[in-house]
Length: 265
Image 1 (tube, helix red, strand yellow):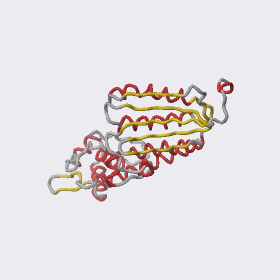
Image 2: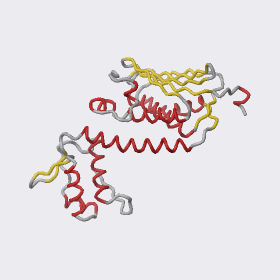
Image 3: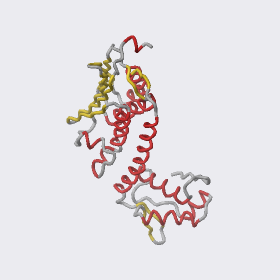
Image 4: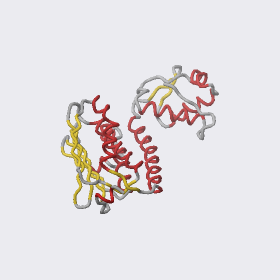
């Protein structure tokens, strides 16, 4: 693995080393039982003091992430996957709160919901083809103008479509629908999951998912939690429906009494 050091960064150099090694374990780049570079070799490679790399390894050992073997060096511990998942989720939780705060500061404007969804589908077309997923689309002909922050809504849609790409069964159909009823616009996205969904909708959108659930969802809960939070901050409604291997997202916004005439203005 490659470690990048920012001399002018806000974190001390040893902290940068610690954080990047943790991330390498979480992502699987460093496997349990794998040997780390020697203290001297890493120091020489990074152009830093041996004292710095020694401190970084000692910090990792204190946290139970690596173990030292006399005369051999440091090795990744066998039992740290759940712990590292928790640490990673803490960092992601912090980022989620930052995103929410940004959304609170953002103003809302008229957005064409159908046009926005079509654009996102276009962005994901190649990824859908790679997974052999067939998109079935049914959109209303009625004006579907909502009040929202375009940038945040784009992120909501990216998260839900990205979730489909990651977890849908290859070679299946994905159904996207937009309906306009009772002064409300509802977008739904439905797919067949590659694995049975042995979890409730509420649990799946929790920011922290632990244990076996965390390993099986691989962070999908956080992405959906972000989508749900950003939708609700803009006055929308975000719902999940799970039934066996069937996964469905529904996002609803009021049309604010917008008619065809006002939609064109």
